[in-house]
Image (cartoon, rainbow, N blue to C red; front, side, top):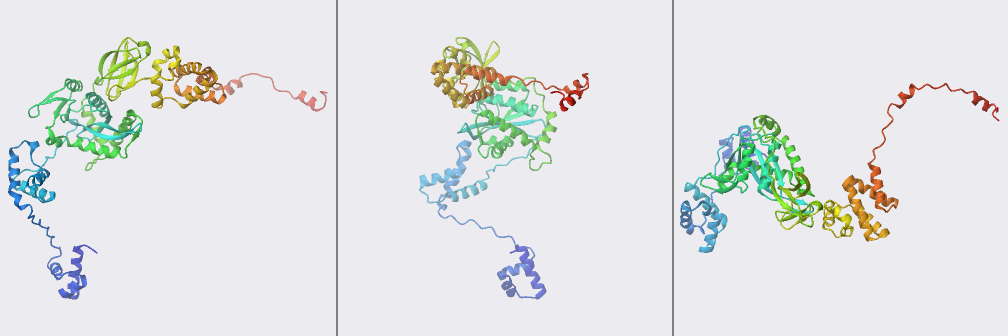
Length: 510
């Protein structure tokens, strides 16, 4: 069946060509005679009447009470005014009203308009190139090492070009906030003149009157390092629209790049995916724009302020003492360092995702930062010198247990260990396994694992055999004899004679 306009056209055509009566036209087209008259009067159907709201007699006795509450709200604090749902709840709980929430919502919406309350409205804005960016945090769930984990996503978006950068952290800490700024601005290749924030704790210590803020010292140092200005939105929902671009970007990015839920083994793997997603987004085109986000960034980048020579030092430095177990305590978690440093003071550089330990200016240990409190991160490599003297401690060591948990201990090593134990006994086998681990430090775990697999296949159940095979694979292949044929061309040699061969054929050599 066609549209009503087409139906009206057919009615008018039949009336003009055949002269049919209104009754006949109504019967032919299956419509009411009123519809036929409307078609003959005008080629355009009349607008349909909108249904009027049905009376709500159950709500009638409460109209005056609801109006009183709405008028009183004008003097109440903004965050403590009635919503339509709260009005419905009070009517049911305090006045035993037998009404529906939808009925209350409809009445409250109409009365607010009649009372002159302004609705939410916004003024369209124009963002000039290189002038403004917005920052916000979002959340997402990921499968991290087999467990569903909530991560926090930092977003920075340039308002003019629409290019955005996202990175994931375990916490919305100030260190994460500062570290993410350095990475985001490096990705953009410049610094906007103004960055807009909501009132997050990483930047604001206290919200003062109006738009005045008491900012944290670390944030002021970040702003001074990159030489940009900051602005803060109004507190609460009123300020959300003031950085609507990044608010929308948080949801768009999550729907586009985190659906389905990604499965990763470590946070660094997730962040590598997120960075690749940001780079792919440079090819997307925002609705209503003729150029891609990347093309707009190419225009905007020359107008951004230049990056400083060094990124902002977001890590915090602290002095710690190495205990007898080769561990340092940083933010209520402990991390291993080379056991030779036991009893000494070292410097810990604490970042949002990584803890580095330095001694005499050199980095001696690097760990992924632990979440929570009272955790321990230990690595076998830090204890090898001690295990050479006490090889029996290897089997029950925390470092070995964590290596197995994190998939850093090959099954080939366990098979080799069992074979060595059967042949040499537990003590000697542990000592040889320690030497295999020392070899991993020198030649790399992958090469030593391949050598261990070869030793097992050949039945050479000795740590020394593993070392021989690993070092043999380390040797470079001999260089090919390039240009050999060319060099032989210049060698003088006599022409071959077939005289002796003829003698042999004739039997003369017998």
